Amino acid sequence: MQKFIKIALLSTVAALSIGAAQAQENVVWWDFLSGGDGVRMKALIEQFNTEHEGEITIQPTTLEWGTPFYTKVQTSAAIGEGPDVMTYHLSRVPLGVESGALAEISTEDLAGVGLSADTFAAANWEAGQSDGKQYAVPFDIHSIILYYNKDKLAEAGLLGEDGKPTGLDGAENFMAALEKLKAVSDTPLSLQTSGDGTPWRVFYSLLGQQDGVFLGEDGTFFPDETIPKAVKAVETMASWVEGGYAPALTEYENSVALFTSGESALHMNGVWEVPTMTDLAAKGELGFEWGAIAIPTFFDHPATWADSHGFAIPNNVGKEMTPEKKAAVLEVISWFNENSLAWADAGHIPAYSPTRESEEFKTKEPNATYSILADTAVFDPKSPLAGVASPVYDAVANYISPAMNGEMTAQEAIDEMKADLQDQAD
Image (cartoon, rainbow, N blue to C red; front, top):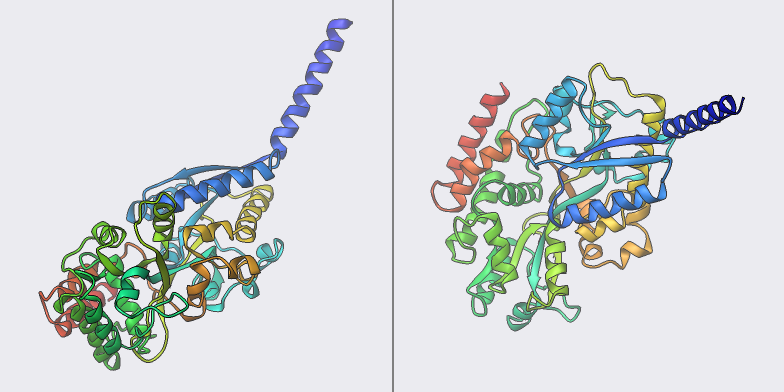
């Protein structure tokens, strides 16, 4: 009898244990975040898991950024082996939809966790769509900005009483400022002048400031009326190198080192290098006071290239997500947006409007200074050929970067880039 009671009790405990295990949802997570981004994201994941102990646990894996990540997403989703949720560049949504790798996220699903178009900047929200359907939820807005060495700008008479640069707006004024900085710096401006990333982001910003159209509604790259504007953008970038203000054939890492070493007075790069500057300054290893602002308005009006890290759900073929799992995934997406102030420590601008408009963010520097980018952002053209690690980036490396370094004319670069991309599109 006692043995029977003991077995019964053990069975009850086992049943309760199984029930508890079933009550907790394990969410498989993939991201591509390393460096300062990765450190800060890992801290957020730990916070989420602590707050949701016994309910939801994120099981994270970090994969290689760029082409390897998106290739793995496509192949894994096709056989039902993708994660439950993943970070995703909104610029790659067109490719993800075309390849069938992304699941649609319904308006009803998002409304259930308090998310909608009204909680994000319009352009940011639309960047996660294809044909009016939502396939990704924005998490941030990241753009290029202008880092500056306050000591060198002050010495050149280019620092205002508020500690911010003056006299940089307008292509001619910017060149004049670089000339002044030549007297106090061997390298007035550092930026990546070899490869694809920064050259694309600067070019697309300068094109946007002229209302240039990179990809027309009819699928034409660089419509005729845009070609002179595109040429002007490349010529402006090339003038920085030709004038001896920015070093030629500079790789990304070297461009950052030129600024952090104190050699360059200005540095054009993404907001994601803010943690680099912050951490070096905290260690006493920077050697100068720094700041960051939105890149200058060189032409008609403010416009700056932007992309977003967002959250997407893979379309795992043959593996339908349970209602409980979907609820857990949506809670993850909502929680991270509601707690995105901490993500701003990585330099990013929160996509979630309540966070971006909060007093806490408005006093967070340097983010608050360049947060206007949320309103002036020009997101990558919607095309499977565009976005991070895409054929557009390859074309930039093949044509715009060589033009920056005097290896071909700006006109030749745009003509050849147009022909190359049009051939791939057709």
